[in-house]
Length: 359
Image (cartoon, rainbow, N blue to C red; front, top):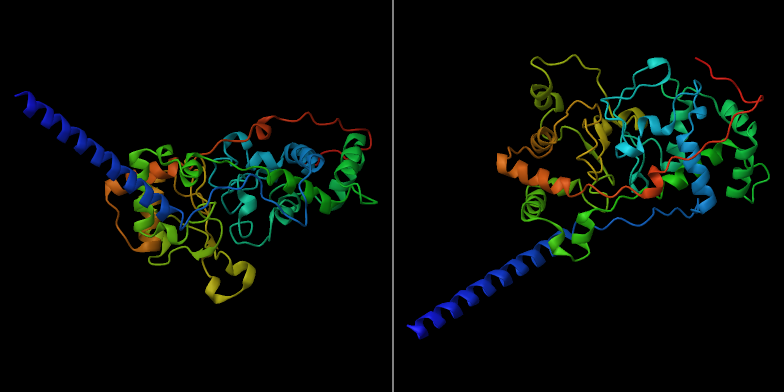
């Protein structure tokens, strides 16, 4: 009896060892597969044309939070790209000057500096250029370049900060440098997550369901567009590659097909027919928190968004389990917001020379 018992123990231990070994092999294979499509986030998004310095980042952070860059004195970059809410405002489309409603959903500013271009239609080549657009957009911050410069030059503390941030400029307080400073700050807004730890070799960083979701994400084809360190953000694609977008999405958002304003996407920038309904593929980093989804902010549920993308882009109907697993994986992309982003700066006071708000 004792020999049979010991033999049973040996086989049990051997079976357990084989199971552990098989799991390690499976995890290693998944890691190698994932590394073909994804890379960990960089610590910062460098730009040789706009070197990141502490002085520039400090100034950029203050400008990012300062509503005086807007005509009304009420709207800052942080209004639509709230750093405490993972860089978005959680509205379908943002509200701007005098309650004007924008045409597109405000994408997150976190990790945006690594994208191939900025805005849904890619009309800005980088965050330096992007930062200057909303300030003078009539339905966003509605200001003028001249008024912004006059405002900043009227505040002695800002004049000194610009001198420190741009020591080689004879006239550092200029509109171009506003964009460079804000961009330098944004280039530090990286949010590494457990997925980055997985990619670096720690296969225990993800749960078993998240690993299934990662494998499903790759195998069903999501990875064709959502890849790289941003899990997206590095290419353009037609929204509705297989099925027209609204034929799929409207059952999720309304009983009857909504009246919509047609958004031609990147065609509005390039005027090329092949760019009709083409948009920048969004990054899925922190997607758990950046609802509502898509360029028009029409879908509030991440599960619905996954199903819609499978239908419109891949022509596939996912099972409930596939959706649950993919969503579990997507939630592993929720990262750590850098501490310095949430430390709200104390802004210098206006002076008698500072232009007054205009409504």
